[in-house]
Image (cartoon, rainbow, N blue to C red; front, side, top):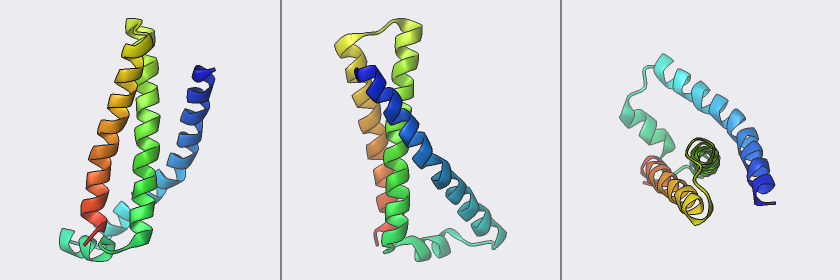
Length: 110
C-alpha cells in the first residue's frame, strides 16, 4: 500500500512541478532578456509573498519527487529495503527541503 501512495505522490508532484518549471524558465528568460542584475532581481522578489509561495511550493514538490525517485532507484539497483530505505528517503527529502528552503528564504525574505 505504501508503494502505491508513493507512486501517486510522485505523480502528483510531477503535475505540480510541470507548470512551475515552465514558469521558472519563463522568468529566467525574461530576466536574461531584459539584462536584469542580481540586485534588480532581488529587488523584485524580496518581500513578495507570491514569489515565496511560488518557489516554496516548487521546492516542496521537487524534494518529495526526487526523494521518491531516488528511493525507487536505490531499491531496484541495490536491493535496499526496510528501515534503511525509509531513512535514506527521509534524509534526502529533508536535505533537499532544507537547501531549497534556504534558497527561497534568501531570495524572497528581506
